[in-house]
Image 1 (cartoon, rainbow, N blue to C red):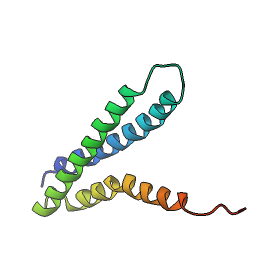
Image 2 (cartoon, rainbow, N blue to C red):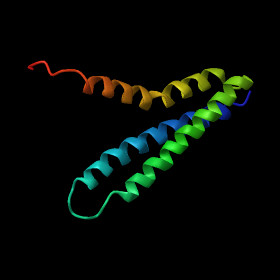
Image 3 (cartoon, rainbow, N blue to C red):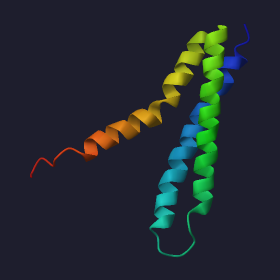
Image 4 (tube, rainbow, N blue to C red):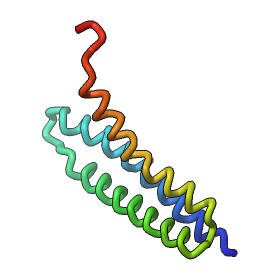
Length: 101
């Protein structure tokens, strides 16, 4: 069994999620800065890293179906779904009333 087939998508997912978080935070800061520099570069990095995470997710599913590195494929799938879970949690939290109101 070749372990690289499972490790490379896992590393790509971790790098992609890190780049997504970095570009999202810095892109928001650049968009709200008011200096006129813009956030286009951060948007491009965010979309490219989202494509990297999606491609790694597809490779992990293929590895899972083929039976190559099943444990690493499952870990990669779980890590790849973290942004979706975070978005759902934030959406639910945004619809909750404030404790003082």
